[in-house]
Length: 165
Image (cartoon, rainbow, N blue to C red; front, side, top):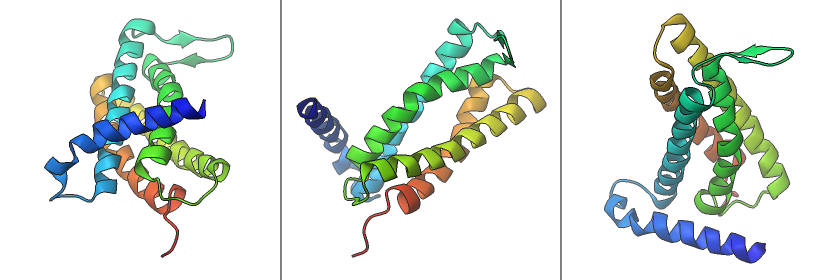
């Protein structure tokens, strides 16, 4: 399994770093890697949200035995289940490699930040869709801009903080 992990990590780094020379003059490598990996994970999140909302939940409220969940919130939850582990993997092994924090501690810190992102997503989606009446996918895209900014600064300065020099 470790061998598979190293192959995946090496492949992702090779693909991401291949395009870095284009951006080298405007941003440091770590910021570029965060943007590339975050951009991939964000795109995956939006794609999964769109597919879930339109085709899995078919824009209908999900009625569970004990609660009803609106389609846009159910789609957000479905996408979250996939993008949470993907985001952690990319952050730990591609973006913030120099961290000295143990994986278990890092995962709990990552979870706390993602929990903050989760609530921001939930609140913004509720406001944009249910108060402003915007389309859910457009609301998800606008929400993403706010959440990404919060996430980047939180992950960099809290979860994957580099050891003091």
